[in-house]
Each structure stands twice: as C-alpha cells, then as structure tokens.
Length: 287
Ligand code: C5P
Picture 1: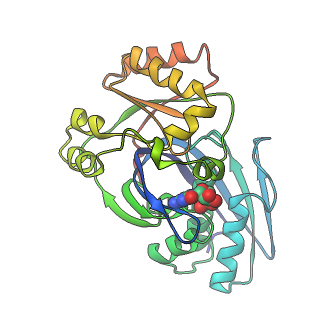
Picture 2: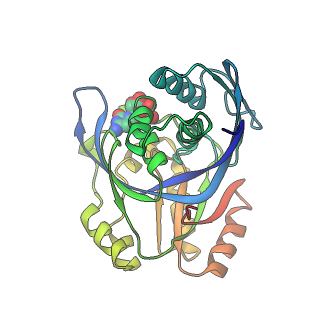
Picture 3: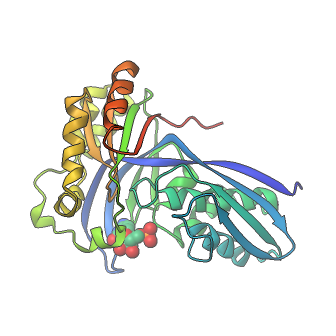
C-alpha cells in the first residue's frame, strides 16, 4: 500500500435539468443528464495515522470540516471501520458556487482515493452510496462520464455520447446557493422543459443538433431572476457562434456548445474581456 495518491477531479455540466416535483424528504425529484468536462481540480491524499486535515490553494474554499472533502473522509472511515487518517490537499481550478459540482467532485475523489490508499475494497456502488450520504451530485462524480440522473441525483444510468463536446464555460463574478435556488423553484413559472429522452437518443447517435434542440434547464427560471447576467451570457455565447447556450445546475455558470475550436477560442477571448472565469473545455476522457 502506498502512502500517497493524487486524483483528477473533473467538473460537470447539466446538459438537461428537469424537476419532476417535490419529494417528501424536502429534496426535488430530478431528471438530469450530467456530463463531465476536462476542467479539473487535483486532489492529493497522504495517509496519516489519525486525524483529517484539509488544505486548498483557494481562499474561497473552506480548509476545515465545512469542506465536503472533509465530510467524505469522515464518512469513509466511519463506513469502513478503518482506523486511520488523511491529509487532503486540493488544487482548485473549478470555480466555487458555480453549478459545476466543484465541491462534490473533490469529495468524490477523496472517497475513490481513500478506497485505494487503504485498499478498502469498496466497489463502485458502495462508493456511490457513501457519496450520496454527503451530497446529491457525488454519486455521479464517482461514476463519471455522462449519465442520466434521477431521484435526488443518485439513481444513475450511464450514457455514452457518440462524440466529444466542445464548450466554453463562463461564470459571472458571484456565486449562488444551490439550496436557495431549489427553495425558490416554482414550477408554475417554467415555460420550457428539456426533452430528456430526445437528448439521450440524439447524443447516442452523434446528432449534436438534435441534442442541442432538446437541452433546457428549468432552474434557469429561478437563477435568472436574481442573476440577469445569466441571460446576458447566454446571449453572448449565441451571438459568438455557440449552437446552444444553457445554465449548468443551479448556476450561475453558462456553457456554450461550439462546433469549431477557432470559433470557441475567439468567443472565449471576447467573453474574457468582461468575465474573469472563462474556460474552453471538452468532454473529460477517463484513464
Ligand atoms: O445534496 P446537496 O446537499 O448537494 O444539495 C444541496 C441543496 O440542493 C439541498 O439542500 C436541497 O435544498 C437542494 N436539492 C434539492 N433536490 C435535489 C438536490 C438538491 O432540493 N435533488
């Protein structure tokens, strides 16, 4: 058994996000296609005899027990009964409070990494179940790739898009609280819903135009009310050549899908004059 392990922790975007209704547990019943992109944090783990330490290179991320990565380590040691500890260092590149699952992907990497570091033998289902106890996006971040998520987000069906997606991501200079966005969600205000089945089929056959036609995110209705820049960014992306522009998760990050790298690069450079956090990404390739 080694004493250190480093993992890449990719961000996700929601290609579709639909809410089927409220749940008795206070959460919302989701139907969302999640897709990992190659904007990544790096999570370094080092075995300790006991205790959990968390540090990051970002002043915006808590370096204590508020960090989801810390909670993931607590859950791992409790669930496995292993006596040990870990020093976690997170190199942060994914924007925080952005709708890109930045905190969830770090927590997922901690679960996967600890499983390796301590040869705990948890299979992927065990790891996903452990992750679900900490956050709704964590099971997907453990599974990776592209998947349809239902339930709170933990019921996952893997999908295989037939082609790589090229995107520009842009985040306005503020963050939103996922909890608040869901709390203010009012299905009476929704005018456009995604065609989840249509997007799934179009992705599988490599029909990008068909996939884009069915992509929608019902949470835009909430976030747009407080963050008009989301609408502005969507318009900018489209004006600059995106074939589709949509908010990811609870926002406020907007992604634009592009067909040509030169067009995406030009769009990225222009948006970057107004917004600091702008990235060109493609689908995350595992391995
Ligand atoms: O599960 P997680 O803590 O990441 O979710 C953050 C917040 O988002 C929850 O507190 C809840 O208010 C909301 N949420 C929801 N329905 C979901 C997922 C998240 O209402 N399926």
